[in-house]
Length: 403
Image 1 (cartoon, rainbow, N blue to C red):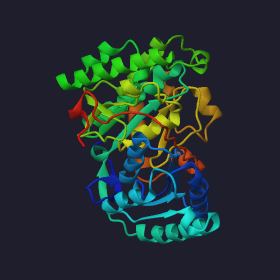
Image 2 (cartoon, rainbow, N blue to C red):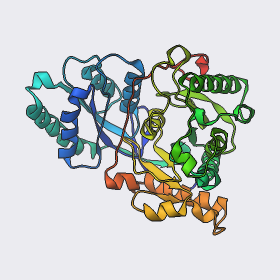
Image 3 (tube, one colour):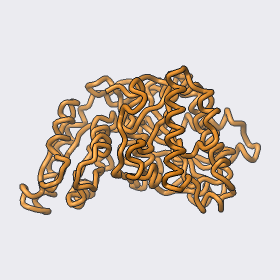
Image 4 (tube, rainbow, N blue to C red):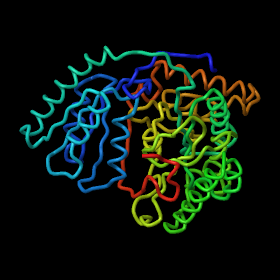
């Protein structure tokens, strides 16, 4: 695994990207249509859409948009606003310029409306795509890679195969010097002792303890734990049973600490991502309103690639970073071959061992990192979701997320 390399896109800050996207950002729902038209009319797979619907201030959302601008998979940014919202496109464009990326911005009100704004934006995107052809390329390997993982639409095979092979791959990635990020602390109910026992040190243990307790209190306050009718239909009986399957995707290596949304891990290794609202703001925002938001949380932390483990099946993709969908259910893989990337079910039939399966997943990751489109990329699935939420970057554990 450590010997596999590919060509990456070099960024000014020294990071390496596996894609060279032109990201068209809208700063309010009113500007979404114009931004979407610019993307769709460009007819180019490396032009992507993301944005925030809100008209009023939300620092969580602003931080997430900034993290996408700084993401190594993004090569250029066009920020589109209406003209009267709080989040200003000029701010976002200036951040991209400081990162050494081509950038532009506009207000639809100042450009003369929809048609003129779309034409101006499309012209800029087309010129910028030509510039990005000259982006320097550098060697990249697993030691440079950041991979995030979450699960959704879980069934009994998720905890037996799908999440297990991700955990085994994560062990290999960490051993190779790479970075792995897992989330969904609300799906770790009852497993605080297991997680804290894997802490890399006292600081990491304190961070995990705080994060677990906060998530449990959040579930109590909103009177909902992260288990659904679909999980029950898939053979899971309780949140505790689901938790065992969900946490196994983290593998077995020491947990270096907890990071918050939009905070890249400060060093390689295995990290837990905290995505729940902070204590004083728990009445605002649901921790993971959908799988797409969870994927965006991981991407905001710099994940080059994200895994979505789903026993029952999913069709979503993700903006900025490719999504690899993994299932341990042979029926799901057979029914949805155009959507599911990786079949982990052979291990359940005794057709291969877990180590061999993890090696196959590593090969699939390297192929996508080398430029092979994931199934969602090939179909044009580039979903994103940026909610209102309240979360401070440095609550309770300042060393976990340096500014």
